[in-house]
Length: 427
Ligand code: IMP
Image (cartoon, rainbow, N blue to C red; front, side, top):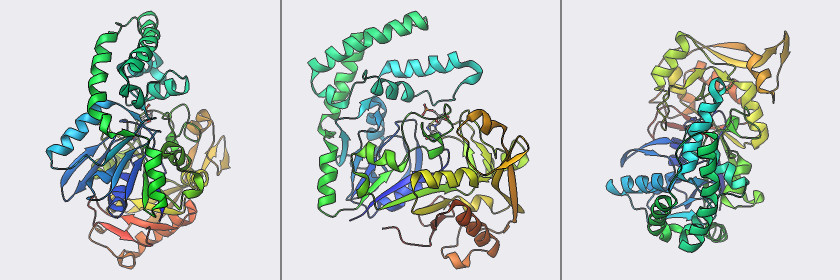
């Protein structure tokens, strides 16, 4: 039995989808534990191309159980659309279970996400406007509505009535927006509840049984560590923890049960939305990486900001997650580059620093200090054996491994499952 967590080690979009899809094949249970439909990844497998936002990648396995854990906020409309799309392509969704403690994204969360962003003006976070921040804020403020509330119409009505009155006064009095109709929201969500009821259960019991039966469990991360509300570039962060610790909490698994923590790093850096990114390239090189790698958001379609690998941020990510294995993705994107840069430190107010500052204002002032390595300038997507990689590419990986302070176990050299080099087995 193993419990393996796959964690985004940068600002999200590290290519976790492919890694999870690959590791989900032999897994017995795959669990999403944080975020909501702000996440998105494209899975390309033998069944076709799929864009998933909420449903764990285990859905493609013929045996695995897929779990949406308590740490996820669920927009039921998005979930049902995703389930319908999968069914249309011949996938079964009967082995999908949703925690009865997961909070719901309500229509007012989505409205407020947009209104709050507009009110921030030039200081906008650049959220996905999916209502994620307001839904997590309500969870902590004890104003949330959970999936289990949908299973009892009276309980749901009472809770919605009290909460919506409060939300409508914010919508109308603070933002001068139109109020929502309680009856409409009630009817809509009761319909969702009826359809989702067979999938809603105490998923911690299911996971405990799986662990006792010696099954393999995969915790599927969403977003990345540098967007974590504690350790990310706050306030330019998301609202739930995408980290290994968040995995235990958002799935309901004790920390001592975690066997392996995989940190997924892209071979360069990207970020969507606002906030500091010391290695961002606003030049031809950045544009060329974006076009070669097609770096546009799966959820919002926004162009991603691209830059060189930031080893200062990466080392910090290893530290706060306790990665046991590093995964380097999209190495092939760098195939044509004559030289490659790695940021090994920052220059701040004329001094060299080697730590990732808590202050966003400080990080914004940090200038990257680069080390330059030769590129390999040859296609690597057909290589499956580490020793067959060009020497310059092995040198680049060796330097990343040293700087990130974690052994590399998987290298991804293309979007398809088979375009993967295993240096060290994971399961
Ligand atoms: P929110 O999670 O929609 O509130 O957005 C907060 C920040 O996290 C914004 O900068 C988003 O662009 C970023 N973000 C949220 N989800 C993802 C993701 O799946 N990948 C990359 N960035 C994300």
